[in-house]
Structures are given as structure tokens and as C-alpha cells.
Amino acid sequence: MYINYKDDPLKYYGEKKKDNYFEGWYFKHVSSDLKNIISVIPGISKNLNDPHSFIQTIIYTENNGKKSLTTNYHRFSYKDFKYRKDPFSLQIDRNIFKREVMILDLFGEYYTLQGRVKYTDFTDIKRNICSPNAMGYFAYIPNMECYHDIVSMNHSLKGSLYLNYKLVDFNKGKGYIEKDWGTSFPKDYIWIQSNNFEVSDASIMCSIAHIPFLNTFFRGFICNFIFNGKEFRFATYNRSKITKEKVIDNKVEITIEKDNLKLEIKAEISNRGKLKAPKNGVMDIVIKEGLSGLIDVRLSRKSEILFQGHGNPCSIEVVV
Image (cartoon, rainbow, N blue to C red; front, side):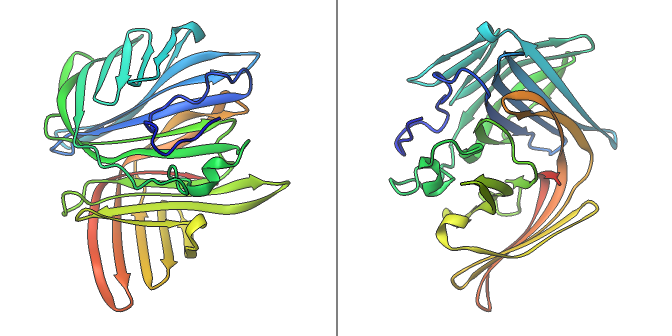
């Protein structure tokens, strides 16, 4: 697997992989009124017993005070997975994913999701030869269990989807894109993401996970926070330290420090739905994700508060 920090982060890495491999892209869409959130996860599962491509959806809706969360797993043939390198384009059956647009044409027994959403004004993360993606220099280490990258921390949406033939308007909404690839998801992890704060460009992604490495393991983490055009990266590879990590019931508290900076996160999970995750390339693990959680973020330098804000909605996964 060749990593180049100048590559499109949407890049497909699994072309030469034959067995025990997965790759998935996560496209999140939040409507401007915050009442509709749809995350779409196209991907491929490579293994000897059950190779196939797939599109998962997790959908949150709020109508007249009634909240609903549903998940769906659309299974497709291995041959339905088609891609183009430059410019990147992924197609699974009649569904198309590009850097600038997503086109859906999904049908289930009791469910349809169709339409087109365009993406503009991507918020990219900082990359260089020492840190080619969100994983820093760990991106260069072969045979990691799971690789992770952030495609866009925050971008604008234009378009709409029809959920069961009912219009869901995403004009002036917000999007987020990331991806994962490798053999398996970590056996335990915390993942938090939100880009709906009072400060319009504020966005955060935080992931803490069990990482197998050289016949042992360590607790690795990546936390990227952006506001007012400034990026603050806290990660295992840049000498940041987690000084607090607590999960009690549906609440998560995390404090990370680097030099004289301190990032404090308090998040609350709600309305979680079941998704499938990979183990040795096979999509047979069940995880739970919530789309409508809440988050409070505080960034300080010594006694000076640089940012303090409330995020709603917030996506959260906790697997222990």
C-alpha cells in the first residue's frame, strides 16, 4: 500500500488485496434545520467465504417532535463495486460517490433513498510528508489492523434526497467525510464527530482505540479540532497525552493535553442504531452509532480559553 500526502484522501487502497480486507467511506449529511441526518457508508468486504460490496445507511429524522433512527445494510455483488483513480469515482450498482457529489438510488423491502447531494468548500486537514494523513507517520507502517483518514472536516451541501419518496432538503446543510481500510475495526474504541457549533467553521473528530502493534498493543488516538481557520491536532504521534478518559452510561469525558494546550470534551450519546463492522474483512460485527448526541468542547492555553462551545448534533460510537 503506497501512501502519498499529495493523493486524494478518497483514494481506494484495496485494488491488490485479495482476502481479509475491507475498505469503507463515511459520508455524513446534516440538514440546515438539524432535523435530518443521513450518513451513507459505501464499501467492500474481501474474504474467501463472503466477498461483496455494500452500502450502509444510518438515518435520523425529527418530525413534529417525534425522533426516529433507522439503519439499513444494502448488499451488492463484488462485481458491482467499480472505481476510477483520477479523478476519484466510486460506483456500486446505480450509486455514485465522488469528491463533489453523491448520487443515490437505493431500494429495500420497506425503504427507498434516492437523490443527489453536491459538496463544496471542503475543510481539509494539514498533510505533509511526515504526516501524510490523519494517522501521522503510522500511515507508513505496513499491516496495521485499521487505517483511518479524514477527507473533509466540514463542507457545504446542496441538493436533496427522497427518503421513502419524501423530500429531505440538504441545501445549506453541513457534511463530513472520512474513511477506514485494513482488516478489522479495533476491538474497543471511542469515536466522536461534530461540525455543528455556534462558530460556523468549528469542527471536531476524536478517535481513541486499542491498536495491536508488534505482538503487543497500545492506546492510540487522533483528535483534530478546527475553528476560525486554525487546526489543532492532538495525537499519539505528536506527543499529546490523554489525561482523562471516562465512559459512564451514555456520557463520555475526554481530556487531552499537548505542550501548554488542553482540550476538554464532554459528549452525550442518544438514539443509537446498529451498524455492521469488519473482522478479518468479514462484515459480521455489530456496533452502535448515535447521530443526534451532544458535545461540549473547551480549548485552553494555560489560563486562557481559546474556544468554548456546544455542538449539536454530534455523532458518537463507543465500543468496549
